[in-house]
Each structure stands twice: as structure tokens, then as C-alpha cells.
Amino acid sequence: MEWLKVLPPLVAIAVVLWKKEVILALLMAIVASEILALGFSETYQGGMAAGVFEGILATLERIIEVFTDAGNTRILLFSTMVGALLAMMRYSGGVNGLVELLVNRGLAKTPRQVSLMTTFTGLVVFIESSLSVLTAGIISRGLFDKFGLSRAKLAYIIDSTSAPICILILLNAWGAYVLALISNYEFSATPVEIVWGTIPYNFYALVTLAVVFFSVISGKYYGPLASSCNKLEHVNQEEEESIEASKARYMVIPLLTMVFGMIGFMLWTGNGDMAQGSGSKSVFYATSLACAVAYIMMSSTGKFTHKKLVHISFNGMSELLPVVTILLLSLALGSSLKILGTGIYIAQLVGDFLPAILIAPIIFIVGAMISFSTGSSWGTFAILIPIAAPIILLMDLPPSLILAAVLGGGVFGDHCSPISDTTAVSSIASGCDLLEHVRTQLPYAVFAGVITIVMYVIASVIML
Image: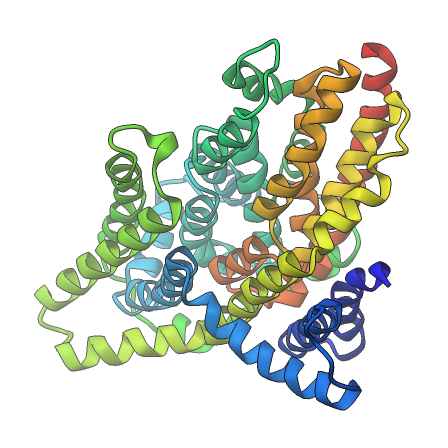
């Protein structure tokens, strides 16, 4: 009955495809996971009806348990506060002001220039994937609307640049996490050398970035993304267009506060070492500081009372509540699947039957399956690195090649998954419907994934 461990993610996928409703899909997947967890327990003696009832109660407790983890709570609060920050930037007129400034100065005269600016913003801010997505998304939303570019396209660009560049450079929390995981094993090279050595072998990240640049420079889009290019995805489009443009600084200063605040807090929480800093603390503190700066700037104009600013902030938060709910349920499902052992089961299915030249491509595929099913690239690394490391040592394989396959697979699965927290944050930052973002990005992610598998086979033939 171990195969039933893969049932919850399959339930989530089936409900999403059937009902086009992510929240219902996540709830049903958590219930299925909790029922199975109870069924696998030796202490559970009830029948089917009792199991379903207890599974529902366990689901409620699993959701509550998300808040017992301080990091999860910070992520949820940060995602909510982003709504307040976006609303204050919007109502201050700073968003429209920045759009006018960039257009008037010739920095954003064409759709191509706007798309390139968004791409480079996502590449430059590689400290943390959520910060990269938010910065590029916030800067570009108004410009994309002005040039008739869809929010789905914006979501694709920021999602497909932020995670790949963060997993390539690794001067961030991901890098510290991976270093900690591989430091438990005695390789011939140092952990730092192995991590930096993954850059030329992280084919998924490199191919994805290449596809983004091709799309942006050529202006050619394919599949569902092509048909969405003239479709705006904004909850209050008419209201936003009616806001009079003011000074760009009402957007730029809070945004810079968030970016540099993130850097400062990463250094502070890491005691001077950015790689050891807490991503959840830093992004939460930086967003809180940016909200405070936006509040003070708007109050100082005399146009906004405290009551009005509070009203604007809560309206902004309410716009993001559906996506924050999805994020909450995704975290709960990931926790439930970890206890159920879904990720480990998937990995072990293929772990004992791999010929040498297929180890890298199969590990990439397994990593993608785990990440897609659990919605967590972090969890994928935690599951797969302890499995991959002994294989590397036993078979004397190139550690950087195999580790790159693990990292790339985690990001690939994230890009395809509707229950990924990264996918949810990209939807928040771009103002794009979550399922629309998944639907339009999926063909690009799969295309890059297929090329990556072929490249890992070729690299394995050459290197082994």
C-alpha cells in the first residue's frame, strides 16, 4: 500500500484540472494525505467513516500547525503586507509617476525595452528569489499595462529569471542551505568548490534564462502565453488608471527601502555573513520597513489621513487574501506530505536501479516530481541530496554534475507546480491569476526540462 503515498498530489492535480480551483484542490489533497497518514499508523484502529472524519480534523490541525513555524508565519505575513505596500504605491500616484518618468526619458519606449528591463531587474536582485520576483514585478506592472503586455507574460518573465539566477549564483539562503546539506559528506573537493562547480552543469537554469532572453528580444511567444499577450490581469485596472500620476519617488523610495533593507537584514541576521542570513526574517523586516516608509511619505503630503491610509492598506491586503490562502494551504500540504513520506518514496522508487549514465537525468526528473508534488524546492533538496551524495561517493561520480541535477530538478518542478510558494509569490508580484500563470508558463518549463534531460544524458556520456 506504499504506492498510496503518491495519491494526495495526484488528487490536487486532478481537482485543479477538473474544477480549475486551487484552494479546493489543496484542501482535498491535505485531507487525503492526513487520512493516509492515519491509516499507516499502527495506533489507528477506526473504520473508513471514522478515518475520513479524523482526517478532516487532522487537516484543520495541520493548517493551524503551519503557524507554529516562525518562518512560515513570516512568509504569510510578508505576502499579506505586500498587498498593503502595493496599494500605497498605487494610490500615492508613484506607480503612474514612475511609468511616465521612464517613458519620458526614453528608458521604456517599446515593449521590448520594458521586457528587457524586467528581465535584468530579476537577474540583478539574486539575493533572494521572493525579493527578486517582487522587485521586478512591482517596477514593471504599470509599464506592462501601458504597453498592452499581459500580466501572464510579466509573471512568466519574473518567475523564470528569479529562481534560475538564484539557484545559479547561490550567494543567498539557498546556497547556505545546500552547503549545510553537503557538508555532512566527505567529498574530494570542498563544499564551496562543489556548489560553485554546479553553475555550468545547471542546465535547466541556463536553458530557462536563454529562453526568456530569446522571448524578450524576439518578441515571439508560443502556446497559451501568445494568446494572453493582450489580456490584462488586474483586479482594479479601471481604478488604477484613474489615479493621477505624482512623483516617482513615492514608489521608488519604498521599493529601494525594501531591496536594501533585505540586504541589510540578511547581513544582520547572518552576523555579517549574508549567506547565513535568514531569508524569511529579512524579507519580512524589509517589507515592514518599506510599508512604514510609504506610510510616512504619504502622510507628509497632507493628502492622506491615517484613517485613509489604513483603509488603503487593508484594501490592498484583501486583494491578496486568495493567493495568501493558497500559500497557507501549500505549506500545510508540504508538511503533511513530508510526514507521509511521499518525497522519499518517489526518490527511492528509482534510486536503486540507475545505470551510471542515467543517474543525472533521472535524479533531475525525480527532483522535478518531488518539487511538483510537494510545491517545495527546499524540501526537494532536503530529500534528494542525502540520497544523491552516497551514490556520488559509491560510484565515484562528478559531485557538481549530480548536485546540479538535484538543484535544477527542484526549480523545474516549482515552475510547473500550481501549489508552489514561488509560483504563488510570482502571481502576487505580477497581479496575474495563479492558474493563468501556471497554464502559460508550463509549456516553456516543460520545453526547457526536456532539453535539460537530453543535455544531462550527453554530459554523462562524455564525463563517465
